[in-house]
Length: 320
Image (cartoon, rainbow, N blue to C red; front, side, top):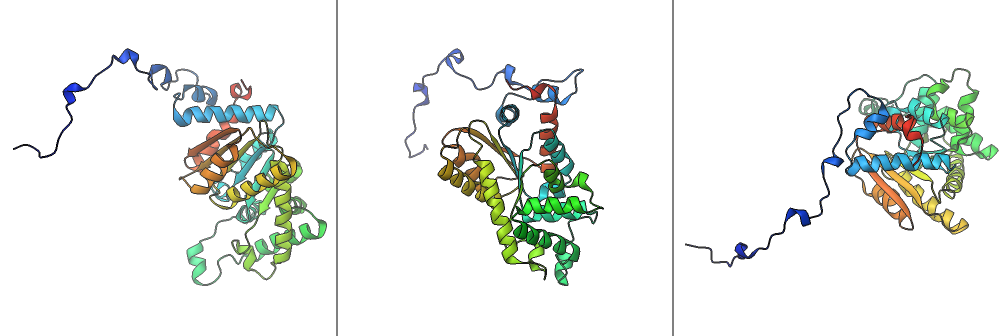
């Protein structure tokens, strides 16, 4: 018995010699085994010339070129970056000129301020939610809500005000604070707040008008920074899945609307899983008029130290 359906005659297939075929992989693309040199530069050199490894080397080159050309290198970050202990690395990059602007959500300021004042951060949400004490730390709300009021009254950015107020505190552990160091280094650090998403919004010290005014000023500061991205700037999004990719897209369109062309820059997204908005609003849409976009998937506590060590390496510091 045979199948009732017709079958193609494989005997009629025409083959070609392998010498005529173009190949994407050959041994020259393979990862190399280190021998005596175990430096980060040699590690990067030994990565295979494939996929994300090629993209990573290319991103390093673009960041170094942006630094040498004095173009913006913007780091947009979710609060998880702080919670997994990466602040000191980001601060070192700020000091070395590899971060020229920071953009964070409201939670970023909460974790940064709590760590800077020596209180520790990241409470047990499930436990405290059960009795209504989740997010009710008095000092956190009082400090950050006051910073928003100061920002409104003095017409400062919200992130600027947070950094300023932290620097005024005698007991501030500034070596772990992104906002304090940004303020001292004159690096714009902006806070982009969605009212109702942060624990400080639920406390009596919150002033919605002050929060809105301060965060809106930060949007305008951020849009001004974005306007300088053209012809060599870099934008990194690390762990913000919704808020900052949306803010970036709006800031970019405002910058183009007011100042004209902003194109030929580099974007990169670092996250633990694929998300729609970072992929579309950071990696794809902004560089349609020119530029490059990269996407890297991995845990922040591994990927950001790798990025930091790679940028601070001696050999990679010279753009090709």
